[in-house]
Amino acid sequence: MTGLRLGVPSKGRLMEKTFDWFGARGVTLRRTGAAREYAGSVEGVSDVELVLLSAGEIPRELSAGRIHLGVTGSDLIREKLADWDDKIRVVAPLGFGRADLVLAVPQAWVDVNVIEDLDAVAAQFRAHHGFRLRIATKYHRLVREFLRENGVADYQLVDSQGATEGTIKNGAAEAIADITSSGDTLRANHLKTLEDGLIHASQATLFSVPGSSLDEKTRAVLAEFCKKIGI
Image (cartoon, rainbow, N blue to C red; front, side, top):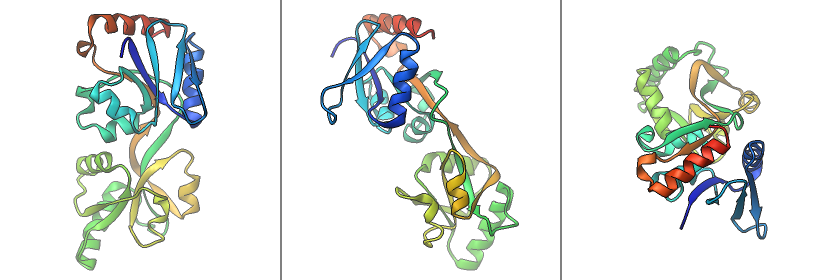
C-alpha cells in the first residue's frame, strides 16, 4: 500500500457526481475492470490510488486509516463515528447529494407542528399507552443527540432498514426520522416534517484523516492533491 488512498462511492449517481466533480478540477477518476470489480484509476496527479467502496463503508475506512481521503454523505460520517470531528477533517463540501434528515409525524396530528408539541404528545402517549412513543429511523446517533438537545425524553427509537415512511402505516412506529430530498415521499405517506425538525442538512463531502496521522511522503502527496483540486 503506497501513496494516498482516495475512497469514493462505488456506484450510482453519487459515484458519477463525484467523478464529475474531480474531473472538473483536472483529476480524472475511472472505474476499471468488469462491472462487478471495484477497481479504479486516477489520472492528473501522481501517487493517488482510487478505492471504490459503498458510501456507508467510507466513514469506517477513514476512521481506521485504510483510506486517507473519502467522499461520502455528511450524515453518514456523523451517524457512524462517535466524536467524528476528533478523528476526521472536512476538506470541502461538494455541493451535490443534498438531503435533509428530518423528524416527521402524521399529517393527522394537527396540533403537533414543532418539537415542543412532540414532547407534550410523547408524555401523554406514555401515560395513556404504558410505553414510549416510537420513532422509526436508521440514524440512531443523530436522532438521539437531536432529541436530547431539544429536551425530548419520552420516546424509543425503532430500527428501520427498509421503507421508513411505511412504518407508521404498518403500526411499527408513531413518528419517523429519515432522509428526504423533496418531501414527496413523506407527503405521499401522509406525513409532515416538524417546523423545527431539521436534524441535519446532508450533502456529499470530501473528508480526510488528520495530517498528523500520515507519514511525511503521504502528507506531501495530500498537499499536492489538494492544491491540484483548488482546496
